Length: 106
Image (tube, rainbow, N blue to C red; front, side, top):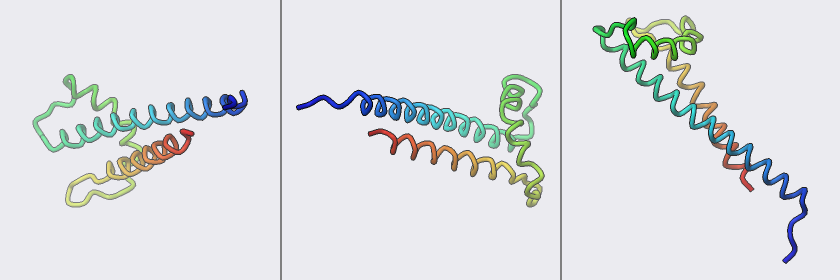
């Protein structure tokens, strides 16, 4: 059995490493989605002081992303539904990265 040409193995290696990068970014987005979920759930508890740790760090980590979507959708019954747009966007990007990482592996 003949060995594959060097160019083919280099292309496979490059595609494999790119797929791994896409997979790693998708995993990071999974973690960020969990952090966002925690942040949204914690907003249901009024007695949390968002200026004390660890809540201040959680707020600093998630608010820049969530602020992009605030004001796009109006509040329904006093509930801010704008984080749903953020979740939809992150899930879409994550799903695309997972698809790319799985189809690039040769």
